[in-house]
Amino acid sequence: MQVSSRPVVDAPAPLLEARNVFKGFFGNPVLKGVSIALRPGRVHALLGENGAGKSTLINLLSGALPPDSGNIVLEGAALSRLNPAQARKAGIAVIQQELSLTPELSIAENIGLGAYPRRFGLIDYKALHGEALAVCKRVGLTEPLETPVGTLSLGRRQMVEIAKALFRKPRVLILDEPTSSLSAHEAGVLSSLVLKLRDEGVALLYISHRLNEIRSLCSHVTVLKDGVVTADQSLSNSDPEELVRLMVGRDTGDLFPAWRTSATGEKRFIFAA
Image (cartoon, rainbow, N blue to C red; front, top):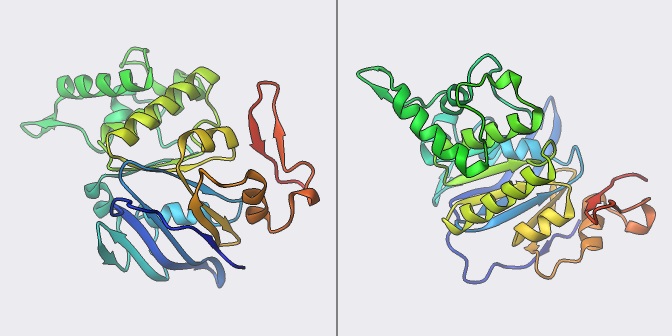
């Protein structure tokens, strides 16, 4: 399949790239020569049907998995793989669909888990609470920091997950369907936060099936289909129907419907033949 590609003009150098990466499992290819570049101060959309290879690409970019071939490029340095320790040190954070929180721990303890501030070898709870409070304010979390995460609603737990990523002061932030469990208000808070992080120079990769989110937040899009990049271009002149066609491999007239418009006017991709 021919890739639709339009160069980024006068763009800053990428912080994180995948270059021609291949990855398979048990002899089944999942990624086939995929390249993507995440640049500071940009929100980059990643689109694709379920099974297109998005999760595998996220795992390669975050150091959770090594590519079979190709390179992960960190600030211009090509690596055969990126390990989790390198990713953390480089400021790469992922907000996954599947939450990584511990229900029995408090909001503050979950936010700092794995990165607790220490004093004389012990956890500095005063510093932890101060830093956790700062990131909670950014995401609109007002619950007491001592609240066990297991008592929160799914949407509030998702906001704790986002605060946890911010606690690590990311330079690269990958968001995988971040609004799927959020209320409209929480989604609005997250959208504002994404734009603030962009303006602060963070490189963001945003995965969503919600067309309005993609078009309002992102400036560039990469489309995956069956592990192959079918488009890598600016969103400013991207036609929605063409993006859907590149995702599913056929005209949107063959789909019922290509996307659905909700009562609130939100357009969301639907993949049903």
